[in-house]
Amino acid sequence: MKATELAMQRSSELEPGRNSRMERIRKGLVKNWQLYLLLLPVVLYYIIFHYLPMYGIQIAFKDFMANKGIWDSPWVGFKHFERFFNSFYFERLLTNTVLISLYSLALSFPIPILLALMLNEVKAERFKKVVQTITYAPHFLSVVVVVGMLFIFLNPSTGIINHLIVAMGGESITFMTSPGWFKTLYVLSDVWQTMGWSSIIYLAALSGVDHQLHEAATIDGATRIQRIWHINLPTIAPTIIILLILNLGSVMSVGFEKVFLMQNSLNMSSSDIISTYVYRTGILDAQYSFSAAVGLFNSVVNFALLIVVNYIARRVNETSLW
Image (tube, rainbow, N blue to C red):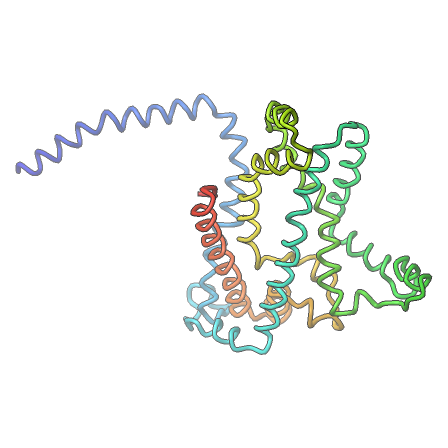
């Protein structure tokens, strides 16, 4: 009885605090209802298209049969994962996916930073705007258009690139069907398309640099390179680290659309990645459970990388996502 009375007394003591907290939340919702209304479509999008579909993950551990549905299909455990790990394509798919991602990260991540640093130093506003427009414009081209441009410019008989190679005494190259050129073409075209748009966030971070620091450094005799290295870069370092974590956390998520459009039977050994393999096995061959297992493996690796990289960044530089 005493224990019950103490519990009731403690509950009554905590009740005013809970009520006041709920009242503050209610007032905040009423006061800022327009902002929450604007946020609602984004929340619904993630719930409908990202969280609700997670119910279907279980088919990776089942032999999915459409007539039985997801829940009633027979459970097989890690059968599909073992099949994938022991398959002939596993090593090739993993190697191509990782190499393309790392190659892309090595070029597409630092180049926007360099572009932003250079644009930040430009004093002629008209020239700066022209350069920004030229570098931003490719972002608004669709992937289909970009790949179509690659096929046109790199055509072995009519492409301008091969015409230049032949004019300089070289031989025409079949770029789009050569496995050795696939990764380079994919990465360089991606850098060209995204570097201007990706530099926007770094330019925004550079706008917060205190001009008094530059003035003091100039008085002390610091060169422009020294001011960039010791003032600008440390200022945008947290932004760089956060974006690096996000990029490393999606190493296995190579864009399906562009690879699929550039892919053909001749460059398959270099272009076949996990996402295109999931498309072939899941959509074309209707092996839903197997393709779901492959896709889940890809997502788990990305999640693990995100956790590890975030932990390392927090320990080394005290800057992280959480």
